[in-house]
Image (cartoon, rainbow, N blue to C red; front, top):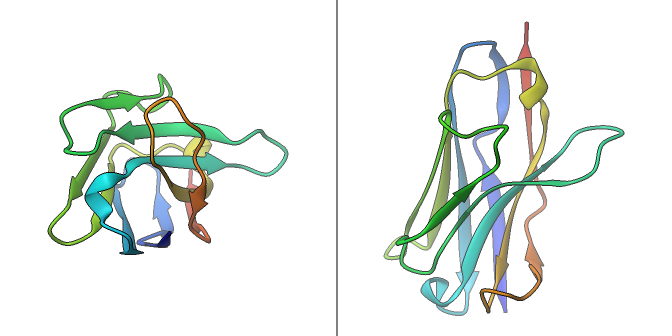
Length: 119
């Protein structure tokens, strides 16, 4: 089992940047497929970005494509999400999640970190 803790959220003006971090403990971090989700009040949870076990493959939602970069450092048991050119519609609670198989469900979740973008 893996434990996940997000950090790096906060209040930022539109056009600004943030880097979210997800620190993992427990089983070997490199065995997990990882993802960043977000959920705004009244909206469904959205997969923002995902990354393979060795960072060889990535996925981005259209809503953040070109503005976000997902990365991981398996030696540090940490995943990152760099968000640039932030928009008010990026305001949400951001969660990192982990799964053990490519086609499986995300089974492990962090507690979330709030990102608020002011206009």
